[in-house]
Amino acid sequence: MDPTSVNFPALFGVGPCNLHGPTPQFNHLSPITRWSIISPVSKGEKVLLIRLSSLGDLVLLTSALEALSELGAETHILTTPSYVGVFEGDPRVAGILLHTGDRDDTVRSLRKRHYNFAIDMHGKALTRYFLLKARADRKAVIKKRWLARQLALRLHVRIKEVSVTELYLNPIRKLLGFAGPTPLPRLKSDFPANRFKELTPYVLLFPGAKSRTRIWPHYPELARLIKDEFGINVVIGGTSEDRQLASEMFSRFADVVDLVGKTDLRETFALVNESSFVVANDSGPAHIASALSKPVMVFFGPTLPAFGFRPPGKKVIVMEKNVKCRPCSIHGEKPCKRGDLMCLASIPPEETLNKLKLFGFLDADI
Image 1 (tube, helix red, strand yellow):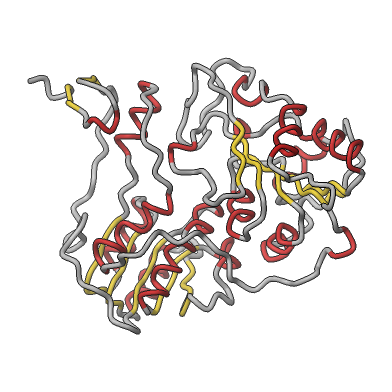
Image 2 (image 1 turned 90 degrees about the horizontal axis):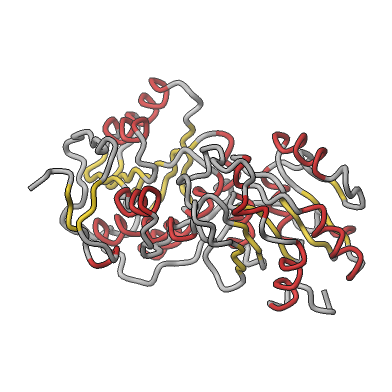
């Protein structure tokens, strides 16, 4: 049999297929296991979760925090300084270790501590190295559904949607014995209350994203439609990296409250929490809104909800178009081959407004 010919499970709905490109290589990190015998966590036992980025993924990781809290574990996080605000003040987190860029410093910090369990929730070479160096009795690495995602990306095969939260829970179920339903992500870190009370009620738009190809281009038109029809404040948010984009985009419609680059992470949590609802791209702010139980509309273009990136919850509207060329990348990191971002540009602002009305996001008592 041709070694590149594989009979895929019925889950993927395909027969024999040829995959092109390199097979992913997994380092052997003994005693790290892909899965091992369940060893239920005892109350107070220390668990280390390793995840260095990015914002949305770390917000989704709060689902795992909830599960570990239910098990009575003492949970510690290894992350980077940019995202420490996701966990500071969270009663489910016993300690936070920071990787500031110096690998050896991080390893020295890890070696000073002992954990009963350590789980790499990132699955990158650097995080696997940290897992290898961590002093822990039991270790595991997250499985990212590489094959399923490649089937969708290369062959446009329809795959089963499995949330990233479920991927985070798998090692906790199989290694630590968690048997309950997957908890929804919930932010419980410290952030100010009533910080933006003078703006309420307001609709909050996040026009930016880590990749330009994930940006819906019609935010100014939607802002105008909401303002004209409902007369409420429209606030735009984002990081300092989104400043140029927002300036260019909203030169067409300036009747907004511009807070792009003017809030830190905790203030962004407060800004989302006090809004009536959020509209965002497939990016961190959409997951923040979901984790704060706020209604959220999210746009998917080059990526797919089936990759696991749909914000969990019942108050979520997904906007997407079935363009033949999508998906074209896992995280939207590749340039649009068409050159016109049809997957996002073809979603009109009028349709978006109608969906917001249909799902009650723009009720009269807003």
